[in-house]
Length: 131
Image 1: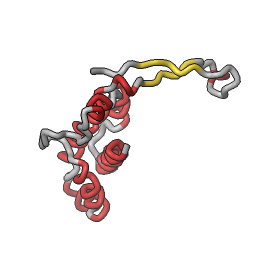
Image 2: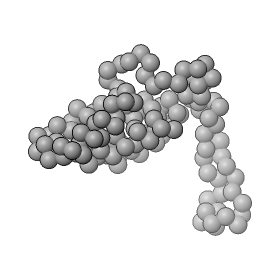
Image 3: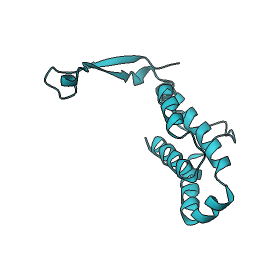
Image 4: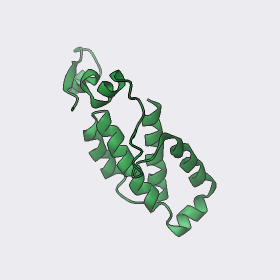
């Protein structure tokens, strides 16, 4: 189920509308896949425990590990598996929330496998888990 996109109408005296923007797209969360799961009491991400996605409890551990062993990660190119799994997790989380369009923008922003981009992806995942 995909969430429907509606538009929020701006008042004519809003600063954004003075730039020529009159409508801002917004999702109807009541139509999202995530909301339907919540109504059924299924609030856990990845209940089938697919190992290709990070679990919520793994994210803080990985962030701490990257911070404490930054030099080792940078010198030995240890970030690639974390980066790839992070991208897959981010894609699934955004899809569950009906924000597939945002994933494409983030992929363009974090197109290079690096320790910095891996860390940023992990932060985004943690923020999505805390929603």
